[in-house]
Length: 144
Length: 117
Image (tube, rainbow over the protein chains, first blue to last red):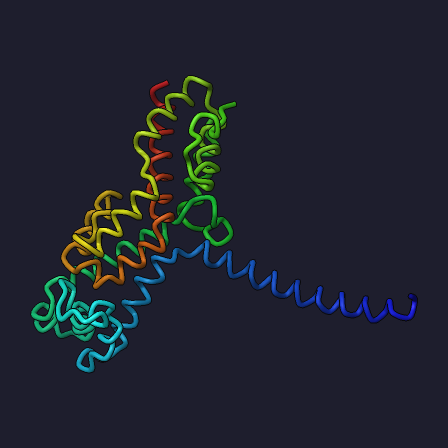
């Protein structure tokens, strides 16, 4: 019994360390996911991608789920190109491609900013300490 | 001390925690008034899910109008839910959308109840 104990202890200690690392990474990831709204990340990420990609290539249209299903047209066809054109300064072409392109940029940015500023009040206190929601939360809790 | 679980048993888990934090200092009368007003004004996550699913069949963006986001509603309406991508994002995110709306509503209702009593 005493001979086998060091090996077991080593194994346990090693797995304990790995376990601890995994738990820590998972917890950090959870905090990150909970603190930053998924929706805001998706909208801003999509806008950034369209701003960085070349509108004339239009290779990103292969991502459209409707087109992959075999439909030839949907009300949103050309929106990605339109947004991309607007980011590259070609306003007239953007409006011709899809009239909602420029409104889409404004609406999505407003929505993402409002999400990031007024993110859920009590479940992301770690990162939102200095944001506006923190003061609101305290004001509500302080009321008699 | 008011108990949210007894007054409003149909709330979601995180919503229940939030509401309990809001009503913990209210007296019984205030808490009952809060429960009556809040349960009539809150949105079920299931309703958000179903109206978002409408975007695949009939018309997209109904859930955004229901949640009071008129700009996003029109954007979804005129672009077919951003070519289904926005609709899929909202299907994944429907609980958070409902929670966001419900926490705002709960705060407003709590302020109203405190002001009227």
